[in-house]
Image (cartoon, rainbow, N blue to C red):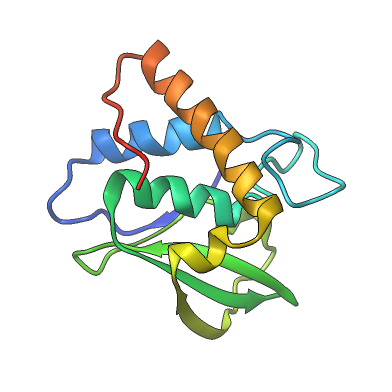
Length: 138
């Protein structure tokens, strides 16, 4: 699966891979926005909630753009690096109207907030089972 990220300068690659593995292993039909979600392309519809969880662990800001006619979120880290754990859901990536969105805005949608709680619980369970450190929800 192809991911898009620049390694943050102050974080080791192993820690980043652990966080991404926890997020990816937590994707499910309960955490997606895509009503036609399936395991063939598990990242589909997971961008907002995945970006929120990544922000929990790494900080930074949420970026939003329109890609292939749909809303898409990814992370801008404190050191300027970007992580997009769900970019592979697009055949081509040509973001339009890139803007920053607040965490509060993204979570102001009840369905997104519910999906976030579900994926966050799953990520915490995955981390606990794999002995990685956990962090408090922001």
